Image 1 (spheres, rainbow, N blue to C red):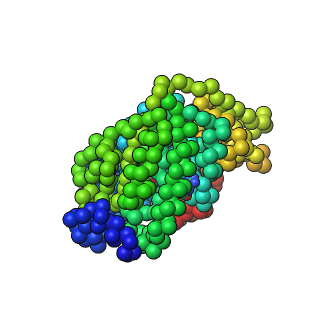
Image 2 (cartoon, rainbow, N blue to C red; image 1 turned 90 degrees about the horizontal axis):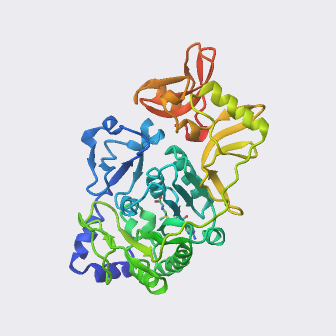
Length: 440
Ligand SMILES: C[S@@+](CC[C@H](N)C(=O)[O-])C[C@H]1O[C@@H](n2cnc3c(N)ncnc32)[C@H](O)[C@@H]1O
């Protein structure tokens, strides 16, 4: 470990420094939170291998060596998100309201976006963004896995939002790119890439993102700022900058279970692995002063050709018990269901425009995995239901077809009550429609 980092931690922690260093020798802890869109699923978990997070209501620690939750088919069904237990506090502290419009500026891989978007109601909106294209694609996959309909995934420099959506958002998450000092136990690479120059560089980028966030936030709106690093330049100094520069105030966070106070700043939260069961983190909450007024903005316009509308309608009538969504958007024959509150994002690279329904090709409609993951057994005319450990589920996730019956056409595979994927049946065989990239 870099001597400069050690010296800095000695200054920050004083006589707790040895305890901190010892805690870095222990294995990292892992946790998950439940997806509130997937009802009544807790009893399917091995109760002996999970224990409740002391603060986050739907959060649980788990023993990842004995209980590899990432491999369960329930993971593919989007029942939970595996997230570092300190990071879980960010969404928890945001105090989400059902109709909030939320922006996650640096969203990938999506731990905070999924937590927040799954708690919004149908009037709410989540725009989650990442500047890195590869990471934005992973973000988009996680949004899909969680079965979210109210979420737009973008891949841009967030400065682009300031031109079209000033003072638009009720809540903004700025989980900033940082020097990663809090990740040293979990990620060897974080140790080797750390340098004082990296701290300076991150602080500079964070400042730009902060300025953008404050332009995008509604008066009365809340910004949650977090990092997974310990130095004050990337943490308290950034918060003091916001408080001096903008008409806003600090919303004090309730500390418990070993959460530490800020350095020279009260009301923020510092998490250290020798006090709190998780990795290192910093969290602060800022409220912009002023009255919240809903601004007029240009909504995203639905559009779809008559021919494609007919194909989608036919599919819904034949295979589903729910009506075709009202607001369809056709992007080169890829069909999305928009929500009426979606803003027009002209000029911004959009990876997922609400719920991706599927593709119209060769005069038919092919439904997507994303659509399957939002459906219940009542919503579909044909389905097969299996248990978590059934061979059929293993075969299906592996990419194989499974034994069907004499039905024909599209249906959905469920693991207990939870949708996993569409299949297409003919001649007694349910053909595999699970995307190749996700098979295992
Ligand atoms: C700490 S991670 C975010 C983790 C994420 N919030 C979550 O909970 O899963 C920081 C992210 O910021 C992205 N990033 C870096 N610079 C950025 C910028 N200028 N604008 C937007 N995103 C940026 C990185 O690609 C990275 O994915």
